[in-house]
Image (cartoon, rainbow, N blue to C red; front, side, top):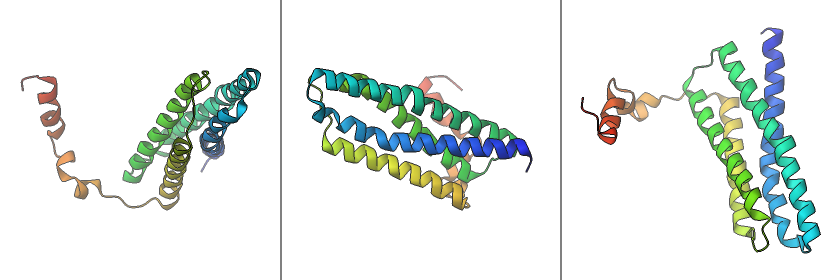
Length: 169
């Protein structure tokens, strides 16, 4: 392994660590909304959460995804386990985006962040991050073709898409 690949792996792991930890911390910060009370305390909390999301969390996500993309091309990682990992990273991106949208809504006067939502979002994020770590560490031999043989059959995509798009074959 050359020096560039080693450096990119270090940057990728650091970016993922900060991004994942931040996504796990965000629901806790959101839950602080109910205890903020006074408008000035709510404003300070909102400013701190926005700073955390914009200055720390989003750049970490960008660095993690960017360095990971560079590593794909350097290492030519095209294995079935990697496709599953990318799908789970996609879930992390969705969690990230939904958290950003929630920041915009949560700090209105009457908005609340329920305990159930806190538990579900934190637990879901932990499950996704743990699944990514498990897959990357274990690199399991996944045979998608035997699980869903019709999905990889030649011409299957056109059979699925053509009726939806209404195009004639």
